[in-house]
Image (cartoon, rainbow, N blue to C red; front, side, top):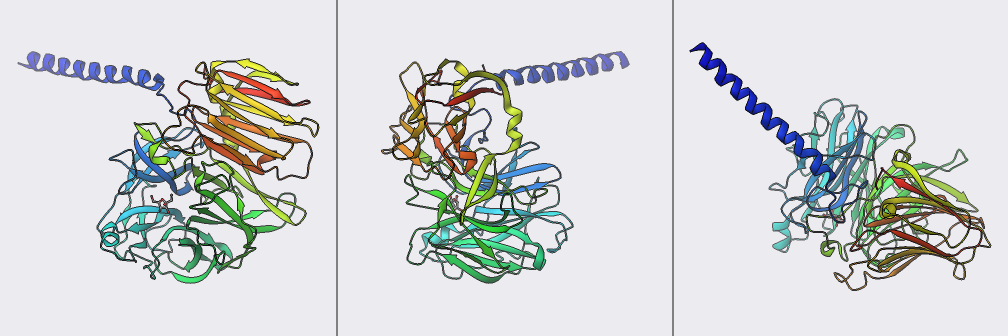
Length: 501
Ligand code: FRU
């Protein structure tokens, strides 16, 4: 009997090991599978719909990325918070959904903080998420006050959240669009500050405990009726000085420089209650069409300010031709401020961690009319310089189907551009096939650029990141050829990224 039992046990264990091995064998195959249009080093949800980054917070060596997520479809719907984590901002691990809709509504955009002082009483170092509850039933019933702010806390590093039973913590004061709270700790006053979008302006609140909030001020452009979304307030040191300024970042739903929505900013001061800045000086974080709802990570070490945007545009986000998933995040970017004359400019650079992607050099060239043929071009990095004498320069990426994406500099108008008119599939939205322009924003006559390409996106960092252009496109086959035209005295280096062949 003992023998029979022991052989049954052995067979059982043997089959468990077989199942385990066969599962494990399948994994590498899956990982090698290249899905059409899936970027290699940008964050995408494994499947279904994603929009804004939410709850960006750094804790215990981990970057958290929560995001607007609808797990039941590849178009927008009842919003949840999806969740991903990364130790290096390059490789992201998918985590279970963090927040589900409830009786108070869908879970719209918001932020997260680490409550080191246990001000809320949820426990020392609790991760506290603050978000908008969007009550769809109230909206359909014709109410005007269907958006209000709520909180939830996690005591296990963001794995699971408990919603606060006193929600909502900020009731709607009678403003239809009242959402996207971004919370941060204001050290000089030892209290929390929150900025949120209230239709055509930002409103500021303060709180000792994340539960009780007092309105303290607002900032908007008088007479401008554009809708604001996803504001953020950050303190930045002016490069090469001891001066600090505050930057109010805000996404604007229409009339961005190249159409549709975009992320803008104002540079000014914050006295712990409200932001003051020149309303006439609204600048753009990005001159491409595909960086929306960009916000920063909270709790980062030192003085690093890291930001992430949603790499799409509401004009066509729900129609882009990917099917398993929709939307990608931008590269994580490090923000700083430079001052030239009396003007401050927000500078965005790819986060330094992305240097780990740099693999082998594909080609270096010191003159005009370069031609490179390599399958890795669709997912590469380029860095180049232009002299005042360079004139017009074009970098044309193409594939065997005759599709081409062009970026470059136009000397006559002193502008940079990305031209996606012939870049690939574009019939999903009239106006997607377009050429976008960005200014130069430097007093130097020598210019430089850095470009990141990743299957369906181009991120062009111009003149040390003073101007950024982010655009998406959908080639029916990866680009495999690069040709340059014009450009006396230009140089360009091309890097193969993450060992792609
Ligand atoms: C911005 C936005 C936010 C809102 C969320 C809803 O893209 O409209 O204002 O909270 O998306 O998904």
